[in-house]
Length: 132
Image (cartoon, rainbow, N blue to C red; front, side, top):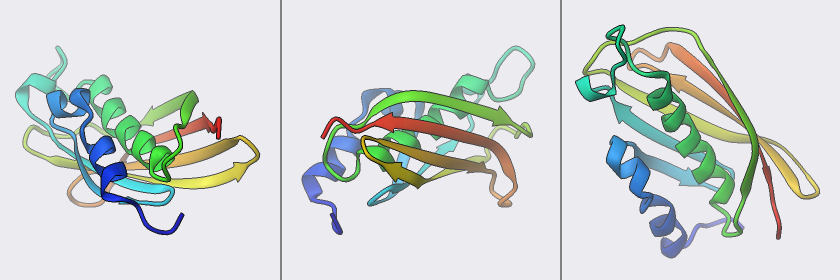
């Protein structure tokens, strides 16, 4: 599929968990997506740094959008994340997802999470099942 329908985009954008966290979908294409999140005080852990779950959720939202952008439901099989750097309150993080492999009923995605300077702060990998 070359172009996404408005309905597909609306379904992906209507995620209530992302809305609760403040994760915004900023770009969506076949097998790709970008999400953003501004770090706020309520996303910090007891160390005063962004909670890993918030960073994971930002990356997972990009993964979910990219893997479901072509209309058929994609079901997550596995994910993992590596954290590299902490960021400050007020910074806006970006998660860029892209499909890196697809064969048969599975596809793999890479998500790079960067800070406002473009420095990579986390790397996320995920694989989905495509029931088609």
